[in-house]
Image 1: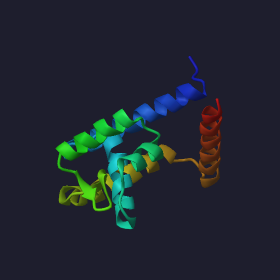
Image 2: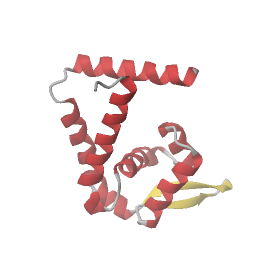
Image 3: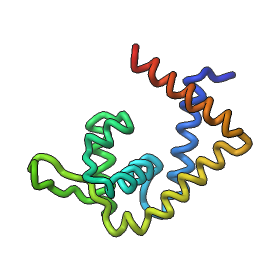
Length: 142
């Protein structure tokens, strides 16, 4: 059976998550958690990162983001700290444990990307990104 576009996207997503989860299992985080941790680590130096930022960037529902962030917090990877200007807001702050894991998480994500794009020219990769962005835009318009 040949996959349609959605089937290929689903298969690739599953393989990426599986590879990251397997590689990072000794750190106690999943593939999805690794991407969110990577996002927080990259954006925290610029200013506070909030759950809403994670929800919007990854297009996650509030409940899904809450579950992922609660697991990261429970595992001591992030903390939720109140911000002085609004008691309702909690910024997502990487812990020392996150800082220690950061290089390994980043290396794993980059290696997975290299493995996935091996033998694919930069032009083909750019075309894929453009097509994927257009598909996303099309689904948003429905």
